[in-house]
Length: 303
Image (cartoon, rainbow, N blue to C red; front, side):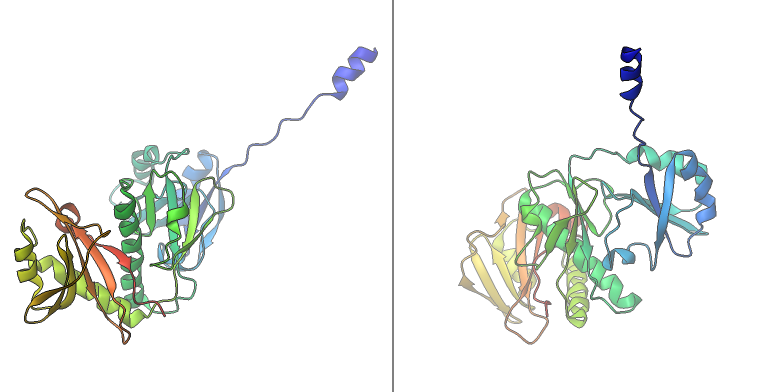
């Protein structure tokens, strides 16, 4: 009898497994997705209060999925990995889910960092430039750390396999990163307050670089390509101040990620867009230039 009671008293109730959570963008077509996510045992946690990725400018997302489903388009973000799926809504909701859901892994080996700007109060036009700026922060970090970015990462996400997250807090960019509650490898990185006029000018200048056709294998050709601009061009032999007429070697480029050979190249260009003497540094390589991508290494638009 005593033995029976002892066994009965030690019985433990099973601990319920928490459900995965989904957040929807405000005004998105939630009804189209609700049945599917509930069948997959997801719990609807709440809504975004703004545009889909723009909501990340205000606050971190602690759900597993963030979904924006519209009449003509869709966008899904897997928070743990930074993988995104987006496109036109030309198929059934079930077909879209079945196609992209297998891409979302629950145990990532890489770090995800979201670029937050809770100080931002601008409009849609300013948001577009700011989103590009933050995306170029993370591209610069990937370049600097030699990390291959994870395929299909969102524009506001750095995703790559790294040993630690210490490099995510970058003094030149002003990023301050902290681990998001409830996740082992997800970090919320807050950007410093930026001069939005400076950001817009920076992005227009970066967009103008794609027309230069940079495919050169000698330093002289790079100096010829930039001599009509007022920039600082950093090459393996040094950094050149270009004044609109020519370029003069004025400083060493030691320690900078620059090289040129017959097969590959990497250069850095600096330009000022505000009233102080500092410059924003953008670095490019052969592949990133072909993909029309640049990494911001130093941002002089900080207030």
